[in-house]
Amino acid sequence: MAAIATVRKSRLHNALEGVALTTILQSFPTFAAAAFLLKLAGDHDLSGDPGVAIFVAIASLAHAMLAVTLGPSFPAFFKTVYEPKFFEAHLSLSDKITAWRTQPVASLQLVTIVLLLSVMAVVTASVG
Image 1 (cartoon, rainbow, N blue to C red):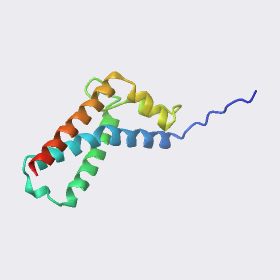
Image 2 (cartoon, rainbow, N blue to C red):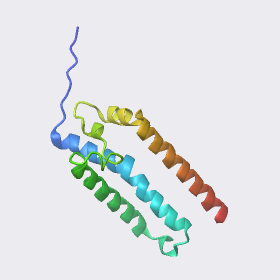
Image 3 (cartoon, one colour):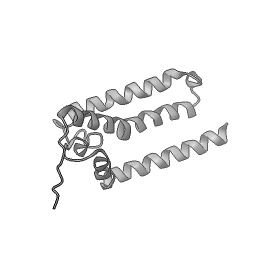
Image 4 (cartoon, rainbow, N blue to C red):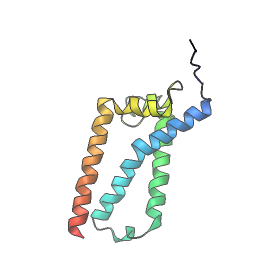
């Protein structure tokens, strides 16, 4: 019987995966929705400005870095932003996402984001 060897990731690789997952799955939707709400509210400064995308990207990364840095020290305060499963070295990238998705809190976050973006898309399409 062949033994399956588990490949250990370096600490840097695991940390980069955790930060990337935190940025993409938790921080980015928050700032993208905020920019979308500002657009819906009639802020004309956002029209066609590439600075909005840059702001959303930088704010998402800064938010994730703050959560990753302070999350382990203050888990009660960062419980909705810091996900310890994203930093488990023995899990592959897809296993980390699956482990996060199957939690009731993450599921609620995803449903909330989908509903919010759906409502905003309908409002945007109907307003013009």
